[in-house]
Length: 73
Image (cartoon, rainbow, N blue to C red; front, side, top):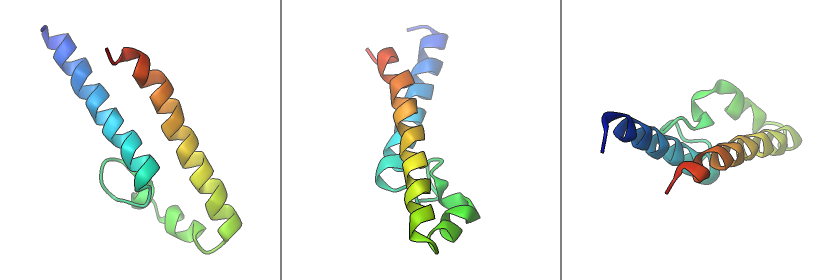
């Protein structure tokens, strides 16, 4: 395995862990989830806005999966 394959594998693993956190624990402050942004907590004050923000977070996670999964072999 060449160094570039190791780096790409590490990147894919990092991004897959980010997708898992975005789907299952979006409010977390670990693994690049959105809990680090103050707007995440502010959006919880209005249920409609919070549902929209969750939709956008899931959309980003899904988009990451679309780009990552063809590279996993």
